[in-house]
Image (cartoon, rainbow over all chains, first blue to last red; front, top):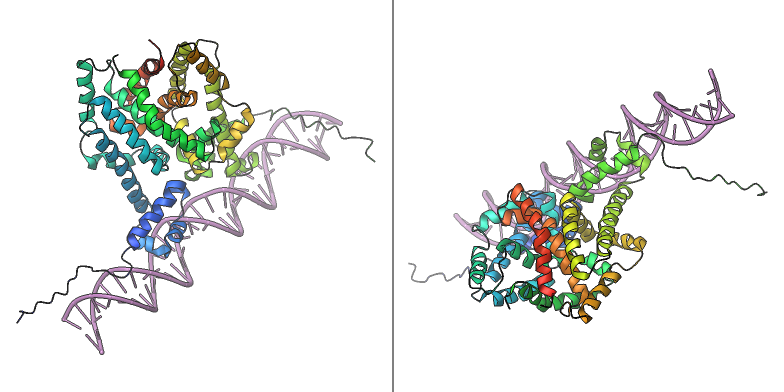
Length: 215
Length: 215
DNA sequence: ATATACATTAACCAATTAGTTAGTTAATGC
DNA sequence: GCATTAACTAACTAATTGGTTAATGTATAT
């Protein structure tokens, strides 16, 4: 009967243009991240994706749902990366060096994300809640206890761990979030600005460690 | 022909009576700063000001011009305050303490401004240029030479003055710009968040001075 | 009082927008 | 073959938006 098994190998369902949904998401990402929820136009996203506008509503029911998909994805990525970098197994001071170097690098490659997230969370603070709800745990518990330990061992001066975390993140994120302002304020061209960020990979961790280390 | 030159002196000293124009500007400020250029509605601004929508176009010709008036005002205020605080006559380390304390205080009272400026400059980088064009001078020349002097006197370690300025400003601005994110990340209620900012008035300058001072 | 210039309003308009619909095409299953 | 479903499109709609207009009020100076 069925000795001969149809090895039809549906390995690749490979429906024709299976990438439409992904195309939409990536087009939407590009448009939303620059123009924001209200500045973006569904037609522009459709054009960017090279498809009919009705497809946006076919795959995602509304502008808000499409936007939320883009936002959640960007935000989760952004924050899970912070957690990942802060949870490597290193002594505190090395961990800080490691974090700054890699996080600035990541930010340079995704330079729209910080201003995008700040914008949308400022205009609709509720949107951030889902991001942290799903990711579950209270973010930097591990890192906070690293700091407390280092303090009690006399490696660093006493500091409020939460203040320190915000200092570290802020020193990395701010110059990217405020890119056009900094370029204008300091009369930087594109190249100078990039060099400026590049040096921060080392400078910022030196700055932080100087500030907290017991000599 | 033109012997009689019309010296009509359009020195019109302000619109004398009721401050409709100012009412509009303040209502527009409130709405734009929360919802942004594209999220704001002219009708909402009119309602907020308690006047007819046509008056918005009577005093400011278009939404863009009204927005620009609001933005320029906010941004000029914001940046001239930085300059003012950085130009007091104090030794560098005291100046940093003075700046941080007063700037954080100012930011707490105007907590929407940072995210507002970051948003609009991100979405339309050109808008920032006029702000600096009019204010003229290259911002912190004085402060930069303060830093250079302090380095050559051996008061602080060698640092790139521009990096230091961005560090100082970023440490003050970031926690305000990212307010809803930080509140969620660190599980802060309104009160705890305010306390958190309040302690930064002292903590941030200690942090900075520790980082740069030669002991 | 009356002419004049400014201030204000309600009603309207043209353009744009997110979202819908009804129908077409193409692949899959029987 | 034929039916069913998913993927896709062009054209449309209902609502909203920034902006205009024409008429009216109001104060001031002559």
